[in-house]
Length: 261
Ligand code: NAD
Image (tube, rainbow, N blue to C red; front, side, top):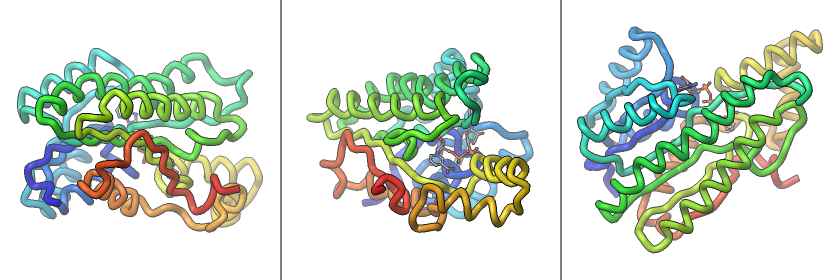
């Protein structure tokens, strides 16, 4: 399958997993629509780097995805400039580690808004465009924490379980329409989101970064290896192919055995 005439929006694609997915689709010459935080210079560098690897267009649209009005503004601009969105990858997300009694209320609201509600808003906007074209792919980057829980991650786990629920409903509502909606559930991936957790683990436990990294993996991920973000990109390419047209409403782990335990 060729992606040359496909327009793909990846939220939270200025870093980590989202950026890796963007790179894989840029190499497929898709039109890549980036979103995510960063300085003007950082975003310019990302666009220049991706543009050097593709004959497709690479653009960035700004929006704080915790704000529904900003999301609407971004989606309207994308539609005005590019016409449609064929593939939507809801990836933007954040983590905050704290026991439930001390989790600040505003952190709960922020995590639910970003990790869950933003996907509702982008899907609501994209679905009519996909229906008009009779083809679409929606991938929600969830986490093993959409399937199982861990202590001190109440907002994150709740948001990710919710996102799997949303995925299933969208899949059912589009089942006959050549549109699929799936949840991809990675285990540990070494990105800034996880590096922060390793640093805290090392500080609190008076350990080296290497010791804290080993402990983090050993506790959850039987392979003892991080998931490569580029492999997540390749998995997304497969889910967007015709061969995956009957995979919909699925929560697909990519977790080195985490959820097999
Ligand atoms: P990351 O911190 O490297 O990237 C997060 C991205 O989201 C960045 O581009 C950031 O700018 C963007 N973002 C943050 N707040 C935003 C906001 N308010 N508005 C718009 N964009 C915003 O994190 P990552 O590890 O690449 O995580 C990406 C996704 O993958 C998240 O949904 C995360 O929950 C999920 N995930 C990560 C792991 C992991 O181990 N790293 C595992 C499973 C799932």
